[in-house]
Length: 226
Image 1 (cartoon, rainbow, N blue to C red):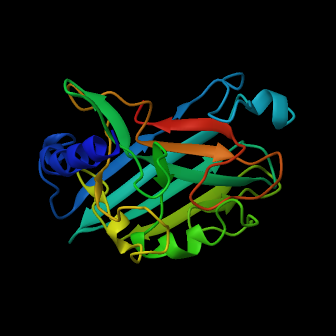
Image 2 (image 1 turned 45 degrees about the horizontal axis):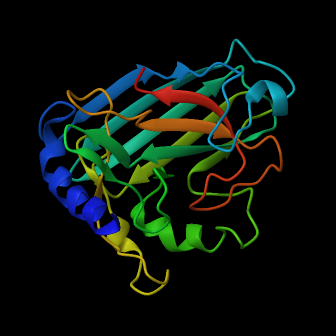
């Protein structure tokens, strides 16, 4: 099964270039809103915004901007009316389904998503992945201010639109048994592709910490695309 998923990921990396808007082009952009996940919806860890964050925050909004060129992507996310003074992390989906069945997944953790961070940050993220202690400072994280406003900015060393996540930037042997290979980014808006999201924003109301390559205990707030 593990081999089948990895082999599928390599094939899909080639095919997925047409999923969004055709092959990634210089200057390709996104300017869009995230979809709000209902505050009563359990995250993958079984926790909800309403249950763990002290309210529903029905007015919360998140906006996304992506500018892609020369094999890199500049990503901006602006959050408003969210829970104040709270750590949020951003995640990228790398496991989905198509007519041939399931494909992809992180070759480092086996998870369906990976931090929305440059491949060059993988080693640093691994150092705070369980059982190691977490951190409030992460390359895929940001903290809201006292008014519930937050800003996330990153420059990715890969094309976000129609690209693949460069797990091969993790040095060989750091994670025993892992295969450090690129894996296609899942876009559920593409014909014939199924996935719960491409980008997800979650909070960490329970411990105020991020946990590297694992989303750990979290509360789901926003998905993109709608």
